[in-house]
Length: 86
Image 1 (cartoon, helix red, strand yellow):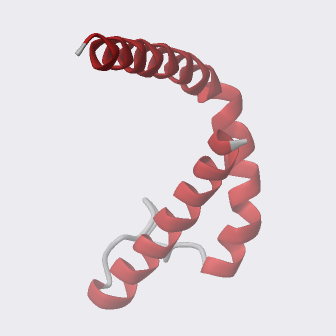
Image 2 (cartoon, rainbow, N blue to C red):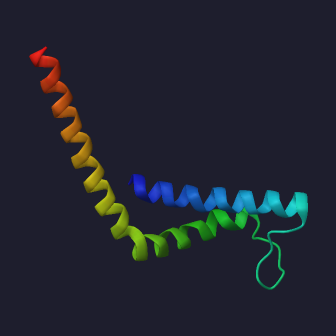
Protein backbone atom coordinates (compact mmCIF):
# COMPACT_ATOMS: atom_id res chain seq x y z
CA UNK A 1 0.00 0.00 0.00
CA UNK A 2 2.74 2.45 0.93
CA UNK A 3 4.62 1.72 -2.31
CA UNK A 4 1.55 2.44 -4.39
CA UNK A 5 0.84 5.73 -2.65
CA UNK A 6 4.48 6.82 -2.79
CA UNK A 7 4.73 6.06 -6.52
CA UNK A 8 1.59 8.07 -7.22
CA UNK A 9 2.75 10.95 -5.03
CA UNK A 10 6.12 10.94 -6.79
CA UNK A 11 4.48 11.36 -10.21
CA UNK A 12 2.29 14.19 -8.93
CA UNK A 13 5.26 16.02 -7.37
CA UNK A 14 7.23 15.55 -10.60
CA UNK A 15 4.38 17.10 -12.57
CA UNK A 16 4.11 20.05 -10.18
CA UNK A 17 7.87 20.61 -10.38
CA UNK A 18 7.88 20.48 -14.17
CA UNK A 19 4.99 22.96 -14.35
CA UNK A 20 6.71 25.37 -11.96
CA UNK A 21 9.90 25.14 -14.03
CA UNK A 22 7.93 25.76 -17.23
CA UNK A 23 6.03 28.73 -15.77
CA UNK A 24 9.11 30.41 -14.32
CA UNK A 25 11.77 29.73 -16.96
CA UNK A 26 9.97 28.51 -20.06
CA UNK A 27 12.21 25.43 -20.05
CA UNK A 28 11.26 21.91 -18.95
CA UNK A 29 9.41 21.07 -22.15
CA UNK A 30 9.08 17.69 -23.79
CA UNK A 31 11.45 16.49 -26.50
CA UNK A 32 9.03 17.99 -29.04
CA UNK A 33 8.96 21.36 -27.28
CA UNK A 34 5.49 20.88 -25.80
CA UNK A 35 4.69 22.16 -22.31
CA UNK A 36 4.33 19.61 -19.50
CA UNK A 37 0.94 18.10 -18.75
CA UNK A 38 -1.44 20.11 -16.66
CA UNK A 39 -1.58 19.19 -13.00
CA UNK A 40 -5.23 18.08 -13.23
CA UNK A 41 -4.31 15.78 -16.13
CA UNK A 42 -1.47 14.29 -14.13
CA UNK A 43 -3.89 13.43 -11.32
CA UNK A 44 -5.50 11.03 -13.80
CA UNK A 45 -2.37 10.01 -15.74
CA UNK A 46 -0.55 9.44 -12.46
CA UNK A 47 -2.68 6.35 -11.90
CA UNK A 48 -1.57 4.84 -15.22
CA UNK A 49 2.09 5.72 -14.74
CA UNK A 50 1.95 4.32 -11.21
CA UNK A 51 0.59 1.05 -12.57
CA UNK A 52 3.33 0.78 -15.20
CA UNK A 53 6.00 1.80 -12.72
CA UNK A 54 4.93 -0.84 -10.21
CA UNK A 55 4.66 -3.45 -12.94
CA UNK A 56 8.23 -2.90 -14.13
CA UNK A 57 9.97 -1.72 -10.95
CA UNK A 58 7.72 -2.91 -8.13
CA UNK A 59 9.92 -5.94 -7.52
CA UNK A 60 12.74 -3.57 -6.50
CA UNK A 61 10.43 -1.98 -3.94
CA UNK A 62 9.42 -5.36 -2.53
CA UNK A 63 12.98 -6.64 -2.23
CA UNK A 64 14.18 -3.36 -0.72
CA UNK A 65 11.36 -3.40 1.82
CA UNK A 66 12.22 -6.94 2.88
CA UNK A 67 15.91 -6.08 3.22
CA UNK A 68 15.32 -2.87 5.16
CA UNK A 69 12.77 -4.59 7.42
CA UNK A 70 15.25 -7.37 8.20
CA UNK A 71 18.03 -4.87 8.90
CA UNK A 72 15.89 -2.70 11.18
CA UNK A 73 14.65 -5.77 13.07
CA UNK A 74 18.21 -6.95 13.62
CA UNK A 75 19.36 -3.53 14.82
CA UNK A 76 16.40 -3.28 17.21
CA UNK A 77 17.10 -6.72 18.67
CA UNK A 78 20.79 -5.90 19.13
CA UNK A 79 19.95 -2.56 20.81
CA UNK A 80 17.38 -4.23 23.08
CA UNK A 81 19.87 -6.91 24.05
CA UNK A 82 22.54 -4.30 24.91
CA UNK A 83 20.03 -2.32 27.01
CA UNK A 84 19.00 -5.44 28.97
CA UNK A 85 22.61 -6.42 29.71
CA UNK A 86 23.51 -2.95 31.02
